[in-house]
Image 1 (cartoon, helix red, strand yellow):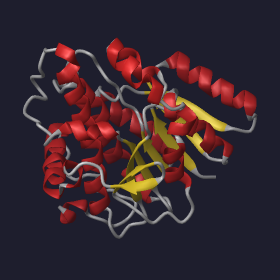
Image 2 (image 1 turned 45 degrees about the vertical axis):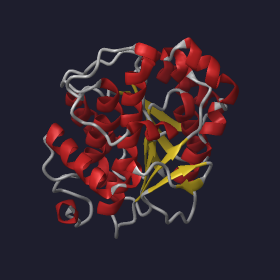
Image 3 (image 1 turned 90 degrees about the horizontal axis):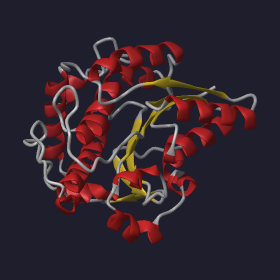
Length: 296
């Protein structure tokens, strides 16, 4: 039986991907903060598919201290992890910082996932066809050149939501730069790493955006099921050989010039390792004899 972990898997496209993978016979673990939503989804899927192997574990990806024990529990339950879906994300109307002092969207969407992957990479490498799928966004175009200097002192301006939108774009650009660099470092292994834009999704995401934004994008939003198609494809498609790419509509796209900048990706990688105190990404006790330090 194949296995999958989906962060943010209790709502939006994560919920649809969890349902699809269970239907395809995967054992699925959902990682999310909201207990009520997670429990309700698991009960719903089990009622539809009594044979479903699905469970949930609580984690807050903005709390770096909580990630290691969470990952240890996941590794215990899923010694071989075929699919790691890094899907959790958020948008905040006011820029705040997490307990470690980093801007919240970047801390949750990028640094939390970076740290989680560090702990679970041995389990993905143990799979004969490991997949890491990262939910990015067309908003990565707003990430500019990935200004990292304001992460620990974010702007307090909410004027037209310019600064929050820029910060959101930065977090999504970071997602893609992580995809590019991790794929480069895993070249020669069986693991495929890809990021994607799901489209504008009709989901709870828009609850924190200004009314004028919601009204502007509303007519162009797609269903959660439609938005999940590329995520499901990258997680399950037989014979997938492409790695390190940005996808939309189940096709490889270029995305912004910044997301294809290898120097920027390596700078972000170094910043992330230093911020999280990681010296050897993936840990020295990896499932395969690969030293990612030599790839840097």
